[in-house]
Image 1 (tube, rainbow, N blue to C red):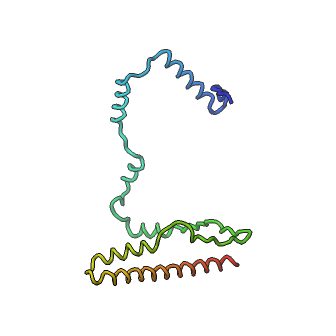
Image 2 (cartoon, one colour):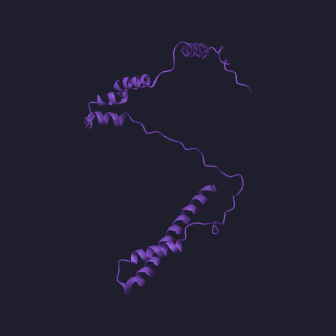
Image 3 (cartoon, rainbow, N blue to C red):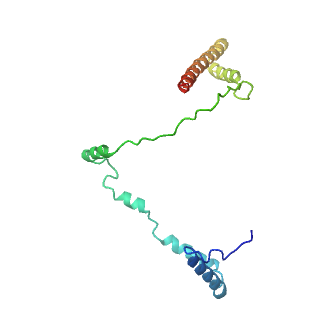
Length: 167
């Protein structure tokens, strides 16, 4: 598609502004030279001298309770007038057909045995030499028990969720 620079000139909303912009651009290029670096520096210095206060900050600074809590009766009034919002996150998708479980055992991931061994070595580094093996094996066994408890809890939650979907 070819470019059409005057495409919106007859648009009711934008046409007048676009035509004026084109006239200004044409008159600047013919009458005035481009601004020099001194002109630009002057504009920057003028802008740096302007007041840069924020309207939000100005209004916030006028708050009589800026650095303290409001009086008790104001807090009670605010608490009484606030209403809890009910947010609905949408419905849960119910699949039209059963979705088969996926075997993820062959996927790359965390090597739990290696992580257990490293954590056991860290724990055993603070004890004397004769106890290192005992501490390592105890740490590995504890981590495996903790992981089994966690996996049982996860499977129970999954079963609860799956039972909930069978309604």
